Image (cartoon, rainbow, N blue to C red; front, side, top):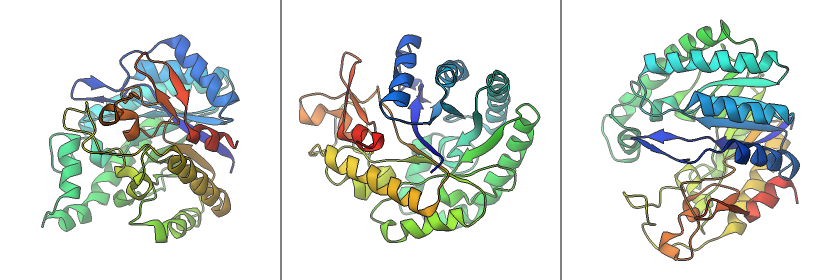
Length: 323
C-alpha cells in the first residue's frame, strides 16, 4: 500500500458545538510528529469545518514530510455554502502545494448525510434517522440520491480544478454511488460491520478493479466489546445529551486493534493505494473511570483523551504502528 494514514480532527462543527474546543498549534505540531514518527504514517487526512484550522494542521503535517489530504468535513451547509467553502479550501491547498507539499484535496465528505439538500431533514441526525428507521419512501429517496450527489460533485470538481493543481477526490459512502470520472482517486469511507462482513473483501476488490487508485478515507472501530460488528454505527452509544453512555459496555481495546489489523491486511492484499484509520483522537469523548461516563468507549481514536486534555495510547495505536 502506497500511503498509510490516519484522520486528524481539527474540529467538527454541529449545532454550535465543536468536537475540539481547544486548538493549540503546539499540540497540533507535536501530534503530527507522533503520527509520523510513532504511528509510522506517511499521510494524514486533515478534517474539520474551519478552513483556518485545516490550513494550520496541514502546514504542520507538510513541514514534516507527510502527504496531506486537505479534507473539509462540514455539517448542515447548503450546496452553495459548500461550494464557497471548497473554493476557499482549494486556494489554501494550492498555496501549500506550491510550497512543495504533496497535497490531495478532498471535496467534502459524506455530503448526503451531513449537509443540506440531498436527503430530507434539517439536521444531520434527522437525515441519519431517516436512513435507519422504517420509511416506505426510503427506496425512492435512495434511487434518486446518486444523481443529486453527482450533479453537485461535478460542479465541485470543476470549481476546485480551476484553483488547485494537485489531485482531487471525494470521501464517499457507498449509497451515493459516485461517478469517479472527475476525480483522481476512488475514495470511500469503508467500515466493516457484521451486516457486510461476508462481502467486505469483495467490495474492496471491486473498487480496485475500476482502474483508478483507491483510497479508504475512513475505517475503524470504537472501543467496546461488540463494536466491530457495528462498524460505522459503533459510536452511536451516547445519550441524547452526549454526556453518558446509553447502557453498560465493556472496554475492549483488543477488539479495536484486531479490527484495524484485519482491515489493513485486506487493503494490502487487494491493492488499495491509500488508507486512513479513523481517528487519531476524539477530544470530545474523554476517558473516565466511571463506566457509564467513559465516553472513550464510543471513540474511534487510537489514543484515549483524558479530562485534562492529555492522552494515552490504546492498543489500536500499536496495531496501526505495526508493533
